[in-house]
Image 1 (cartoon, one colour):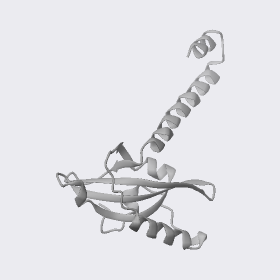
Image 2 (tube, helix red, strand yellow):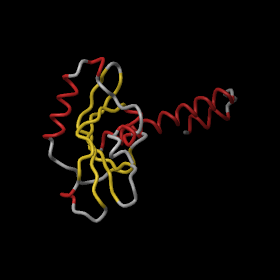
Image 3 (cartoon, helix red, strand yellow):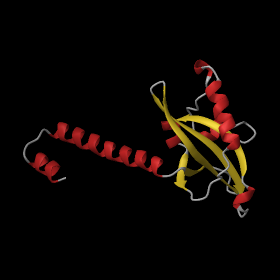
Image 4 (cartoon, helix red, strand yellow):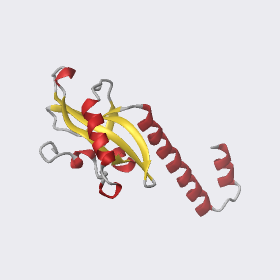
Length: 149
C-alpha cells in the first residue's frame, strides 16, 4: 500500500494508477474467494426457509481446460437430525464460476456415505467426453426439476 500511495503522489499517471489498483484489488478479492472454496468441502446453498440445503465437494479436476468440481447435493427440514438428510443429487459436475455463484457459508456436518456418489461419478466418467454434462448455472438450476426449488 505504501508503494501505491507513493506512486500516486509521485506523478504516476492517474489513469494507469487506478487501473493497476483496480486489478490488484480484483486479484486479491478473487484469490481470497478461490482459497476459501478449497478450504471447505461443505457449503450451504439457497433453499426454502423451511429447509437447509448443502453441497459436498467430493473431487476437483481439470477437464477440457476448465476447473470442474464434482459435488453431491443434500437437503433436510430445519430441526431434523442430520441423519434424516435427503440426497437431491448423487453427482453434479459443475464449473468453478457456477459453483462460486451457488454457495453461501461453509457448514460443518456432511454425509459421509459415498456409495451413491461413486456410482454416479463413474457413470459420468464412462459417458463419452462429448456427451458429459457440466453444470454452468447455479446448482439449484441443475438439479432434477422435482428438487429445483
